[in-house]
Length: 334
Image 1 (tube, rainbow, N blue to C red):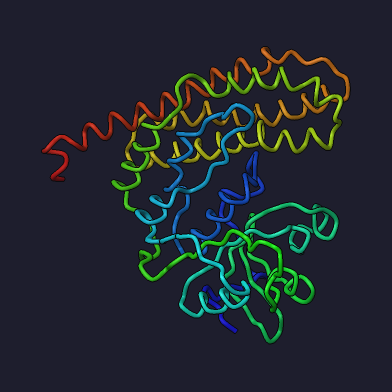
Image 2: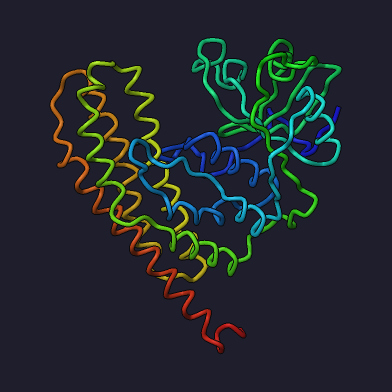
């Protein structure tokens, strides 16, 4: 057995970003995985949420957001690179964990027992897990996924980590997560947090992404009515759910910035809280619209677009003012 983190699935407590009081306790598999990985390593994942300020609507989906490699390295000392899978993945996982690294790889959620009642043995869906413990003799794998730390074994282990080469099947996309240079557990460096946030703010999209998403919602509704609720839920995950989850994470980041002395960011967080809750309500309204109810898309999304602009403007403006003060020689020496 090789166990990098020494965690017990039964005693694992998720980070507050995944708590029951959240509007969106789950965001997407990549962001959720890193939230819990950073938390499990003794760091605060909120400090790295500056990337939420650069989120955008890409024409047919809200951008799938996650922690950039630069943020993982600068704030937490975690280095990530693609792993070349040239032999059975099981051998790579065992060896990488023996080096003290973690391994992230794409899997079919059909084989993940933590998704029971959703996809486990009922539906095929791509997701990503982070392997932290492996016991080949007992066919057990400990892994981070979504909001927790879990263990699988038996047939699930053999399906995800077959002992023999996969034949004509392509190997999954796999990442090597190196922890040798990780920083000591504790709060992230405040100045680095703000500098990374400034980079995210500098990449914020032109125009209002919520307004552009609203235009697409209006165009998609007729097709969604034809395709039904199953298609709607897949569509909603990539649009209103991602937007709402991103807004809620950005709000948490705004409050964190305020605690670091970036004054004014908390006001932006309040506006983004409204977007997070509003997108949840919008999803329910749109589900009714798919079943034939009438919905006034501009009336639903117009206020949310205004709240998004206000929230992002306030947070990015407060970051800019803070960084400008940092760059003043007298303050920079303090």
